[in-house]
Length: 168
Image (cartoon, rainbow, N blue to C red; front, side, top):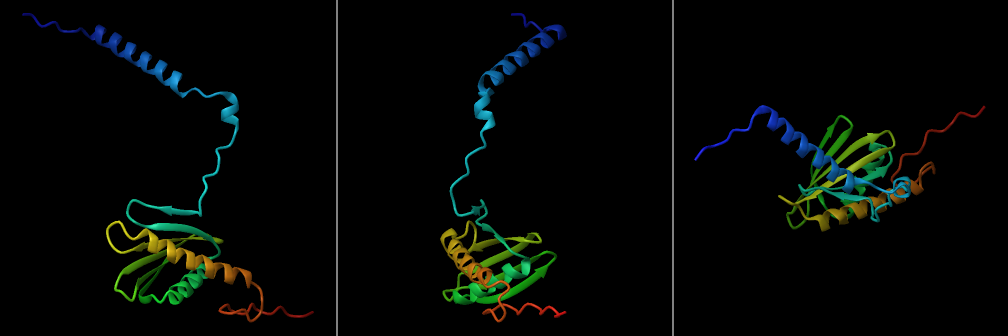
């Protein structure tokens, strides 16, 4: 029995033919109508919460880093969580908290722009408890709403009084 070897020229032709067939398949499957391409994609319904494979539940809030950190501290206090550790960093703040039952959580706040910050929460270990993280986010959002409502109001609860402007 003889084994035939394919020459270099035959290899090139075979590869070219396979490439051409692949291009035809891609062109046939990937083509869209013009009116479909012009329409913007529909917005996904949701509450703005993102989850990761590592167990973090994140949400972006409008407000400076200090504003969102203040709302987060107030939410942690209202939920009865014990603050174990605070770690400030460059454009970020991290909290380690613990529930009365002993379950731990990590809250990381990162400043994305001057007016937005992302809060990422992981409750427990490995994949995390997403329901508990969402509960903490709902409390942060409630605090954020209260504080946002009182912006610029002198003597607002829990907010520093804005500096007074000199009268001319």
